[in-house]
Image 1: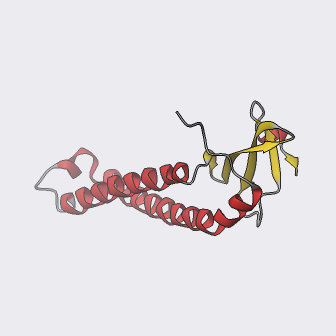
Image 2: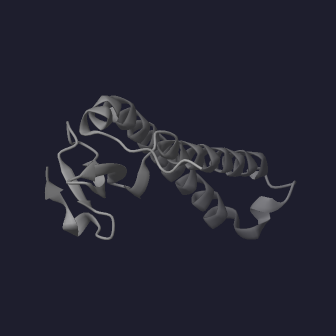
Length: 136
C-alpha cells in the first residue's frame, strides 16, 4: 500500500495557479450562498411559515432559492474536496491554508502554503500547526 504523496517545493509552486483558481471559485460560491441566504431570510421574515405553502405568492421563488442554496453548498463541498485531489491537506478555507507532505533533513514534514503567497516558502513539523511555521 502506497503512502501519501511527497512533494517538492517546486511541485507545489507549479500547482499554485490552479490552487488560487480553486480559491477564487470558492469565493464566488461563498458570495452566491451569502446572497441566496439574504433572499431566503427576507422571504421568511416577510411570510413566516406561510412561505412554505403553495398558495403563498412567493413560494416558488422561495423554493427556487432553497434549491439554489443546496446546489451551491454541494458545489462548495465538491470544490473544497478537490484540494485533496492535488495531494493537499486542507487546514483552512478562509483564508486558504494548505499543507503538502514533504521531506526536510530526512524527516517527513508539511510544506505549507497560504493563499496569496506566490511560492511555497514555509514548512512545519507534522505535529505542529500554523504557529510552528518556519521559512524554508
